[in-house]
Image 1 (cartoon, rainbow, N blue to C red):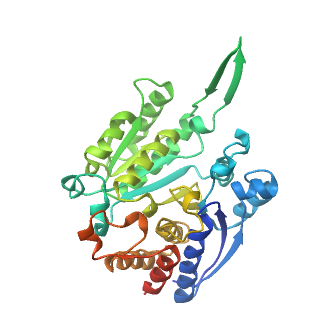
Image 2 (cartoon, helix red, strand yellow):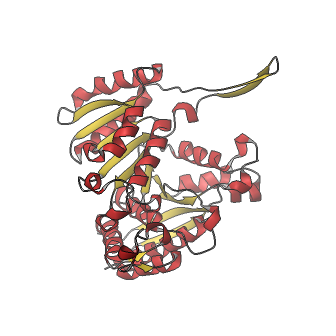
Image 3 (tube, rainbow, N blue to C red):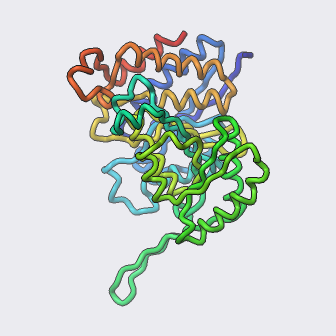
Amino acid sequence: MKAMNKKIAVIRGDGIGPEIINQTLNILDKIAEKYGHVFSYSDVDMGGIAIDRWGEPLPDKMLDICKESDSVLLGAVGGEKWNSVPGHLRPEKGLLKLRAGMGAYSNNRPAKIWPQLASASPLRKEIVDKGIDFIIVRELIGGVYFGEHRSETVNGTRYASDLMIYSEKEIERICRIGFETARKRRKTLCSVEKSNVLDSSRLWKKVVHEIASDYPDVMLSDMLVDNCAMQIVKDPSQFDVIVTENMFGDILSDEASMITGSIGMIPSSSLGDGTKGVYEPIHGSAPDIAGRDLANPIGTILSAAMMLKYSFGMIDEADSIENAVSDYLDAGYRTADIMPRTDEERKNCIFVGCSECGKLIADLIK
């Protein structure tokens, strides 16, 4: 591939964010050196650190840096320190503003178990052996998280409401992402909603079936969200691509990550109509282990691989990172979150911290 220059906005964030981002940038620097690319990084304050420095979770000038970059690499934001700030100033509001500002309406979260970590799954061996390899396509900038939020007190009684609103256009564009993703995989799509109760879900179901005729090669099925939550732990092998709205996708993707063995291993991409995206691990900022060199940076490292593949078209470069992670796991290296549970299994593993994990993976890039 021709050498490329790419500008990456880097949000180190809070808690373990700076640690896992530092290791990921080392990996990207190794890729740039090997393949002749130039990656330039611009630091962006978002989350708790932005509240402390600027008085808000994502200042407009920081969002502008993200919008002017080729993509955004994000660690994690939030922490107990900022739990008492007003709702509109919570660190997570910065994340919502970033997604909306970038027009990133499609969040893709793979749930795939690495064979080296099969024993780490909380599911029974016979379930894991059937395979876990699916993707959740989550609508990201609509629904209840972006609807009107109201709190009021009437006659001494407190009330609160949150509106879940979707237009047919919003539903159609995310469902088409689901169909297109399924076309590139095993050609089955499960649309998840709550149409037995919610009007927004009834519209969702109607729209997804209206556009299904444009994808005759993809098998479409419907599933209520509560049933889907059960089926993910009962038989995850039945799923290929799941498409769903914002809040349902938030919950289901976190559940799906845990059956793969560790939330620390799961990357994600958030994209809109262009190639610019937001790439981040799905875990939180874990302030309880921040600064202790215990964090697992692999979810962030694999998010960078997704950025190379989906935003920059660097397929070989992304494969180099994924192969290095696989070789790292083959060699028996484990951070605390993926250490085996039994003494017998631990005998073949080597405990490493966050910084050593990043260094080993960088050294394994071929």
